[in-house]
Structures are given as structure tokens and as C-alpha cells.
Image (cartoon, rainbow, N blue to C red; front, side):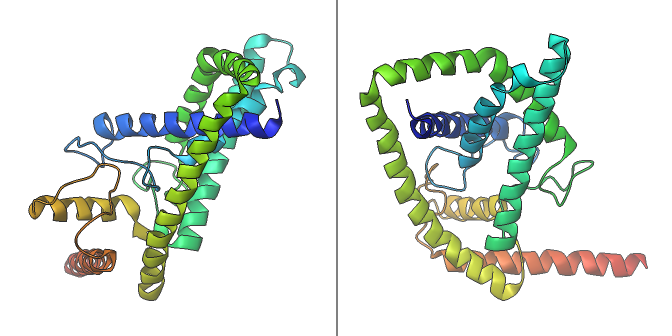
Amino acid sequence: MSIFLTMAFLFYIGSLAGWGIEVLFRKFFSRSNPEHKWINPGFLTGPYLPLYGFSLCVLYLLSGIEPYLPFTQPIVNKLCLFLLMSLCVTGIEYIAGIIFIKGMHLKLWDYSGLPGNIQGIICPLFSFFWAVLSAIYYFLIHPYILNALHWLSKNLAFSFCIGFFFGVFTIDLIYTANLSAKARAFAKEHQIVIRYEELKGKIRQYKEDRKERWRFLFSFSSARPITEHLKEYYNDLKKNRQFFESKLKRKK
């Protein structure tokens, strides 16, 4: 089976599984969701996170270098492998975060409140989580992925499902790019970085207050134009900034 089909399959599985992990994490463990509501964590509309898709591809490729690591003890070899996996996934996370902040003026996640964070994009705690997930992948998932790839090579009709996924994914990407272009233009004009989760939360609150139907996947779907939501977001941002500035002046 070609490497392209293998990577496409891994991206497909990783994107779906990662989305599920993030949904559960934000529902039960995230401090940014104190009400424990169900939140669609994705930048895109559908149930997939490309960051996890790319990461799974990297974990799969890195698993193949274990025999070439220089250590003789198997335990040390595996620990080094998991460390390398964690660093690579953290690197992907950082690159993705920088691309969105610098290129789109959007901040999809924020680790600013966590110790040792770098620009609020990466931090040691989540790098540790990536190491744990890498170990889980290596011991519990990787052998089954190899079996799945072997099965896929004999059942190429399943590639139709992968093609269908990428078709839907592409349509979603175009739809989201249109929304993001409006958000980017607004953020650039007002020289701000929009926190994606905050904006989605404000839209959800707006819809709940007006008893509009809340769609879990279509987070930005609203009777009100996205530009109006952006203006309200910006006004709230200015109010909060003025509040903290006046508070600092009082302390001085």
C-alpha cells in the first residue's frame, strides 16, 4: 500500500480520535469550562482535529526508528522514544499555534495560566500529556494500526470512506476559511488576537439568551451576522482592558 494512502488513513483516524479526546477533556477536566458544557473543540465545523491527525502520522513514523536508537537497554530506548514523540508533537502544536496567531490573528487555545508556558501556545504540562499519549499509542494502539493497515491493503474499497472523509473535510475547510477570513480582517483592523473559544462562548451565550437553537457542530451558525458578534467581542475586550487599567492606576 502506498505511503500516501497510509498517511491519509492515519490522518483520518487521528483527527476523529483527537476530536473525541478533546470533547471529553473540555467537558470534564478543562478549567476554561467551569459549567462542564459539551463544547465542539475544533477550529473546523465537523468532528475532527487536524492537529491530532498530523500528530498520529508523526507518531507512526517515529515508532519505526526505535531499532535505530543507540541505547542497549529496551526501557531507556522506549523512554527516549516517548520523549522524542512528545517533543515532535509539541513542535507541531507550537507551529500550528504560531501560524494561527501570526497569520490569522486567532488563538485557538491558551496555556497562559500554566507554568513554563511559551506564548501561551505550549507548556511543560501538556508536553507531559503528549508523552503519556505517545506511550498509550505505542503500547495499545500502534499494533492495531499495523493490523488495520494490513487489512486496508487487502480491502482497498475502504479507501472510498477515506476519500469521502477528505471530501467533507475540504468543504468544511472552505466554509471555515470564509468565516476565519472575516475574523482575521476584523482582528487585523483592530490590532487584536481573537481567542477562538471566547468568541464561540459568546455566540453560544447570545443564542441561549434568545432561545435560538444551539448546534453543537455549527458553533458559529446564528441569526446574527458574524461581524456583529466580532464587534461585541471587541467591545467586551475594551471594557475588560479599561477595567484592569483603572485597577492598576488605583494600586499605584
